[in-house]
Length: 382
Length: 212
Image (cartoon, rainbow over all chains, first blue to last red):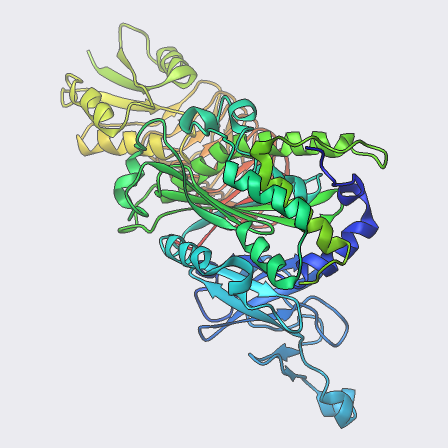
């Protein structure tokens, strides 16, 4: 079938700006791991939809704020993570769990009128913790998170992420591709046997197939369209899901496995896709997890933040850092295979580029693009 | 005649054997190489060590020659296994290395040809200083580090245990690099680096470990 996605959806900055407003701002976005925020004053910072956000631990309670000091717009936390009070290093302003401001030398130097002083506080964002995963929503009136992911997906994310260890390795890849190429790639079960033939596919034999039920659903969607917001939300929930994906070619067997509390006990590749831009997988039957967060930066730029952690340690062991580093470098091979092809595709796109041809096995991506284009054309709003 | 078990893998084993032979002629020291398979697993490695003869013989000694894999942990594990057996593991200082008087150097260190270790430095056990590397005065290098060939470490710097410094790295005077770091990207380091930070030439941003 012929895709309706125009090349502008991948290359046009005005489209990208509209996409931020219509898609990302109303939705819950992953921002980091709770295990990185496990002590008072621990924080993480990310820029989501162009807005700098800080999540800070206040005596065990997590709060999300815009990471901009209301005085002179200096970022309050300047590192991507750390442990530090919410305190602006420029003029010493500090902030409490409500975002209220303490201003040193306030009476002597600032003399704000009361009505102006009352407005000086940090902009707060809604925050939800799902197991070990922290999400924020930039909308003033957030969608209930269950409406975005569905109860079953939230339960699965909670159960699996509670298996995570507290030692995390992470890095960021600066991808030169549109973020949607990543979600399309992740929902394309046919590419691993070719693109990852010498890496991931050696361990897990992914088999793409056609779901006649899924194709029939797509046909109905193509004919009837998305009638209302309720139907749009229901369809959006179908883009997220997770659990067992494909059996492993051989049972996982690494020395560190004896040191961790494995998530479940099955020799399967686990896969969770949380729409729009979060992917979690366990390629070794629940002994370790990779978390990939695709953060849109510009139409042709995506930061791919990658976290890797094992399942919880039974007790500390000397080589845990080496295990994480080895996993990260092993994962790097697969990541670069994906990034390279997405960057190649991005380079081919131009305003007059023809639309892709999707096979029936790609019914999920086809449904997703119908939903996406209806959203972008204003047929419904989130 | 004294014997030395030289245990390791690949080019490091070959180099170590050549270096020990350049120090002591065959008539004075018998070298007994043991090539191990790093992928063989702990049990196989232990079995290989158990098979060594004369570990406790008079004049017997050992040397481990492995690269920086697994954050230098494999070399550390192998060395620890041998130490538990009570064998001497003196440092290897290749001909042409210049080590200032009073430099403290522990077991199984390996100082490459042409390396310069200046006054007041301490080199932890099991650390490899590559050929031509320069270690400034008053530097502390922790155990099981890997300092590649030609690396320069400025005076007073502190390099943590199991750190790897790759080709082309220059560590500024007084800088501190935390344990278990990798800096494998050529250039001069003028900021302290937190433990478990991995800077690779292949990665745009550092890889970091958070938590424990």
